[in-house]
Length: 88
Image (cartoon, rainbow, N blue to C red; front, side, top):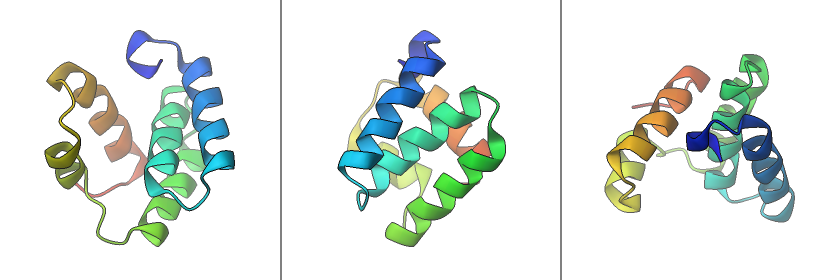
């Protein structure tokens, strides 16, 4: 949703994902990206802090190495995650 410019849908998907999997850091990371795209930066930073609480070694580059996203898709996520305060 996020890469298609459907920020509201990305937010809803991320919110539901966090509700279903509250201890899975990646759910919080995707929610943080959606919040950045909606201009809700304080909330995005709070989600980024949750990511790092759940997974202290999380970095954007490590996620890219493991996840194998297409570069165009990952650029959208990585920019949003940087804006939320996740480490590169």
